[in-house]
Amino acid sequence: MSRAAAQWSAEILREQAADLAAAVFPWQVDAAYEGLLTAAAMERAAEVRAVAAEHLMILADALDAASREPATV
Image (cartoon, helix red, strand yellow):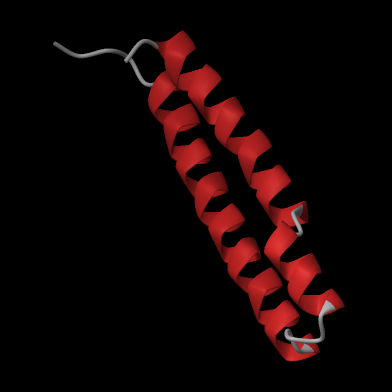
């Protein structure tokens, strides 16, 4: 993977992580409206999204770091 491609991939992953961390999934809104999803379940879903976003950020950082290393053959 070229450096430019790795940097681009890292940036895309960071954007996706930010989107994921801020997301409220449609099924959560529907379920909450219908009274089927408790506050605890909504909170747990937010925690899961935060962990997934954190993992995307770690991957993005690793790609970014790899793009800065000299290429070896």
